[in-house]
Length: 72
Ligand SMILES: [Zn+2]
Image (tube, rainbow, N blue to C red; front, top):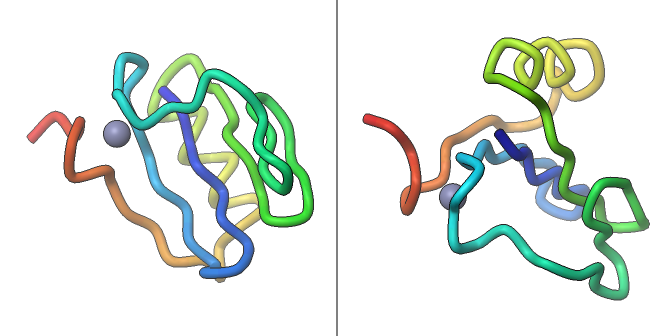
C-alpha cells in the first residue's frame, strides 16, 4: 500500500503495491519512501496503517484512491 502525498494540490492518493504509477526513483521535488518540497511516496503495510497516518498528519488534505489500481 503506497500513498502519494502531494503538497501543491493538498491531496493524498492511495495506491496498491503493484500500481503502475508508483515511481521507481526519486524526482526533483518528490521522493520515494520520504518527503521533499512537493511531497513524496510513502509505503505502509496495509490500508489501516496508511489511513491512520493520513488522519494524524494530513486531515486537511483531500483524500482519494487511484483510478488505475483501486480495488473496487
Ligand atoms: Zn494506483
